[in-house]
Length: 221
View (cartoon, rainbow, N blue to C red):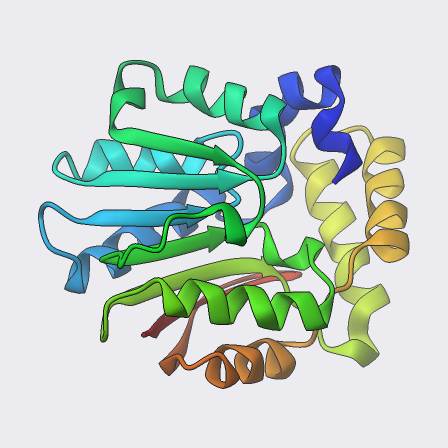
């Protein structure tokens, strides 16, 4: 996640997800609606990977009674989250660090969007268990990130780059992003992602979103 300590990359962050993640705004909205199915009107929601604040803003605007605990390893991205939230920032307590830096809860819901693909499999498994441990029984969790069948990785990442180019990103930048993903991200297959969710103690794991190289699931603690 070195890019998230680069001031220029952080400043541009909010521009990129809508241009690189198919259906990004709708995916966030769906995530919020899925959490709201079981979370109470005054829910306290744990958001892992909260830097930037994009999903926090969507959740806060859509659910005026919710409060949030956001966790992210990048201080610069947490500063951006505060700016993104603006007058809503008083409803979010932001913590620099990994999942171990999150309060114990228990929380009424949790989300982890475009974050788990940065984490190696063993640590990802532990992270999911730690999220689950901080949730009340039966409450919802949503996650969305890169998730690609292992024998189709080149194909789907080429489609990812093509989508970014069609969205206005320079082709050379899109290709560099694709190369960086191949070199640095420990992307799992959809089957592996679902297995990790179940092994962490989540039930009712269901796919709710698919956008080229990205997948999203809802599950219950």
